[in-house]
Image (cartoon, rainbow, N blue to C red; front, top):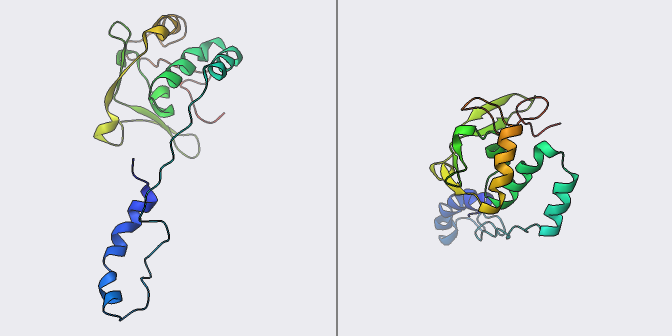
Length: 160
């Protein structure tokens, strides 16, 4: 993935080299040290022991959320905005077609992913499907398009 800040300044620096080459200016004023070389460090992964510790410390209604968030590529907003009709436990997949976005002030917006790549089908590891089934039966909203993960203040929020 490209480093947004490195690539966002890169085009500006391309228009200035000509005056610099012609010695009309001493130095490119748009040049930012390190901006031309994107460096996105690899994200650290969590250990299974830490996952077990999180599960043990989590209230029962949030354990499936921890499992799905840990073992899939779903982001927080995609987990919080997950609807029952997008969770296919028979096929073992999640269709990502929306995300719940929390704006400043606590306003929630049920939105679509920002890019076409954000709309995707994600495979669920078969080992966590029984926990997801139990969660859906006990804690998810009952409507066909109800929220999968809900909290005391329905739906889930990033803020407390």
